Amino acid sequence: MGLERNLIDESYMKNALALAKLGEGFVNPNPMVGAVIVKNGKIIGAGYHKAYGLSHAEVEALRSCRSDVEGAQLYVTLEPCCHVGKNPPCTKAIIESGIKKVVVGSLDPNPKVAGQGIQILRAHGIEVITGVLQKECDDLNKVFFHYIQKNEPYIIMKYAMTMDGKIATVTGESKWITSQAARERVHQDRHRYMGIMVGVGTVLQDDPSLDCRHRKNFIEDKDNIESHSLLVQRQNVANKEPIRIICDTHLHTPLTAKVVTTASQQTTIIATSCQDEEKWKPYLEAGCEILLLNKDENGIDLRELVARLGERGIDSVLLEGGSTLNGSFLTAGLVNKVQCYIAPKIFGGQKAISPVGGIGIDVPKDCLRLSPPKIEVLGEDILLESEVLRCLPG
Image (cartoon, rainbow, N blue to C red; front, side, top):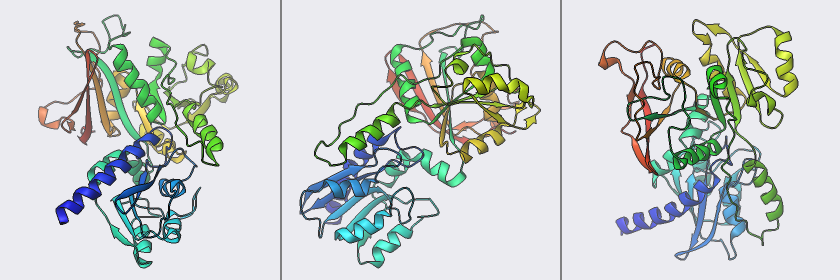
């Protein structure tokens, strides 16, 4: 009976996980959360956190119910909140609903919750089971967990290379290494994460737009009295471009660069150590933000940069720079995940650039260690994704 009960709980939690994923790219810096309400062996309500600032998953699930919730069970991917933020505490809504049992996937590391939500529910006579599909629920919100515990963005270093490990030819040409399918996947990640970062070298070489061509479709409940306002707010989030961050120690970004000329339509931060405020003026007039940072031996202080980005609520950054910026971030121990797109091509050339610059290591034992990669085939290309297990000695 215990095994059967576990399988049933896991089945409902899988439904909640599928719902939670629908919030990807819309809820940052909040977590993705899904909830399912079950009574007499049937799902009577379901919901998910649709966009930052909107109702939480538990409340959405309760609103969706068309029958009495008294005595039902709630399956939720993340511990219900118990504090007042942009929304009232979900524990209060659960207690008032008459739900008798709550099944939780992940515990919330937010110090404002951190087990207190479960304690409050139990104190009100509600049975709480934790740890159902915990790994899957934890994996869903790695970005949130990292951000809420460190107050720093989760950094994903992404690059595309040929099978001989080149990110450009000997002349510096790099368009296009990968196929359309792989590039579409990149734009999905630009939707998923809050920021995109490059160095000034990439701006000078490629003049990128650093925008997101990926847009999600919405399916809203037309019977919901708030459906129109929900749809409008969700569309606003969907149409919001990722924040562009340009690492430019000496402020050499051309005023004619796309990231500058479009700064009034897309938030653009230029991180620099240039203290000449007269030099800032045309960038500020174009709509850019100037983030003044200390300088170290290699350029702007990257640790200070990451801390400052966290302070302004940026929970994740897709690092799309060249080998120099990649090397600097790895040496600083600031990369959390590596995305390597591999195309079935050969460029050759000893002077052709590889993905990671810097001085490198002397012996293999000092290497940066990565987790076994998750492998995804995208058309003719392959994507390898690994978590950083051990940083380079810096």
